Length: 304
Picture 1 (cartoon, rainbow, N blue to C red):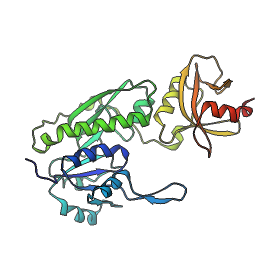
Picture 2 (spheres, rainbow, N blue to C red):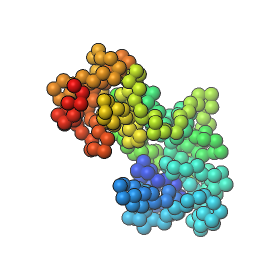
Picture 3 (cartoon, rainbow, N blue to C red):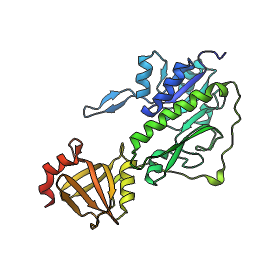
Picture 4 (tube, rainbow, N blue to C red):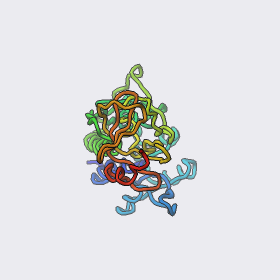
């Protein structure tokens, strides 16, 4: 029987919550490391991360280091021995800290490793129009997303699925694979499988400017951009004198010039490098998200 308190969990955003909840239900959580509170909203009030809020609600000890320095290490040691589980912590963990893990630290990575190593695997899978992806449970080593695989679940990507929807599904599957594998891992009954480095591909950090739409691209590429950046930075453009965030789209077979706007009753189409994109939801700068029928009623005069 495993002892209670064998895991120190590292995570910060909503994506990490299902995994934390699963391990907490199994009575395995010794403590949690998460990012410090950050300002949010117009008032810039400091708010806890979703992971910290869960810990507050469930009386779980948390550490919120600004730096993973010696002072942090000294505070962490009182929770050892324990094995580290990392799910979207949001910062590179130095090797000297990972070496404190009783067994090799493990991580949930939302791609079919060795495909899409790096910081934006979900966005990149959508951006590139992948038809499937995966969640991978892996050991951490000194290289980025390079460690041996402990388990993997493949997932079909729906044609119009966006980042929020796909990330939500992958986060739940991450919790599932952890629940299925963690006891065997802690009792050293899993044989890790090395990744094939020859098949490795990589993704980059997403920047705000990546959201700007280039209407000379194909309609499918623009649709994928809207899907990939649904949460941040969102796909954005300017039409006439209006700055807009494009929230939801679909590809349609219409013959329009690139960036040409065509309104038809309560529908809106914009030309791309081939076909066109139908706009389903949109957000004018400083305003709330609108269904396209409401936008057309309020803004159609701007496109005549």
